[in-house]
Length: 324
Image 1: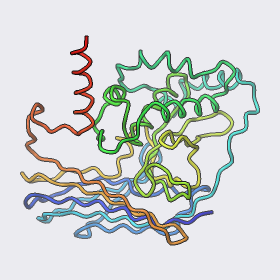
Image 2: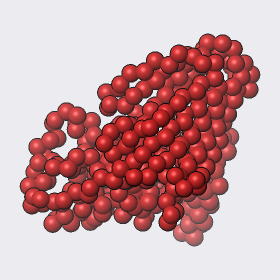
Image 3: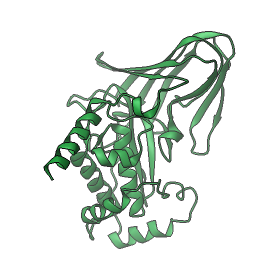
């Protein structure tokens, strides 16, 4: 039963003064039998009143408006949580019976939302891969693990090559991304064979063997298995999400679970900095920091700078065309 201390700081810095910053935050950790929240403190610049409610997917959501003129906004979430291991699924039915039960669930709320595919042109290319990875004798549990293994083996984990706005088709084309991209790809594969799949946002905590994305915000998928419930699967690390994964929210995709969303009044552009530190009970601390910039009047698409990996892929394609 490990105990983790997590600090998640979101900092907006504006080019000038703005006002009426309205924000929606999903920074409240899930509290259940597998995740015991000992303490959670939330500090926001200006100390605005935060109203909370439970959304359709069961997440606690906060909303606030900072009306005063300001050139920076900080949202500081601090929590202590104990996680408990959950038992792994045990297949007690024949494979055909479990698949039939999933088939019968396709029109049942709330599973409908988690079976609907997002728009993805590459699905026609992915279909034969899904069929090849799915063995006739496999149960949904083993099928989900096979799909996770495929994503892990065939997509490169490279920070900075994608953003939260990167589409599935772009990820499919470059065969690279980060945790949220891996989770979305796994969900496409699961939903294609009729397994309800949902997106999970949270944190991955220190592990003695080292894990991709540890000490930072993280994302993975959950697959619904009849007779068991929702099973967390982390394709970024090709493992089952268990006591080293701390859950914040669940939804159909990243948009449903985004930790912070907001708008403000003013003509200034802004810089967004997100830093997460995770402390283990042995005193070890991991910290990650991401910086994003945005402008109210962005440059035209043709003059937007491309990241190094995108330039590399473009160069390779040009070389291939010259050789033809």
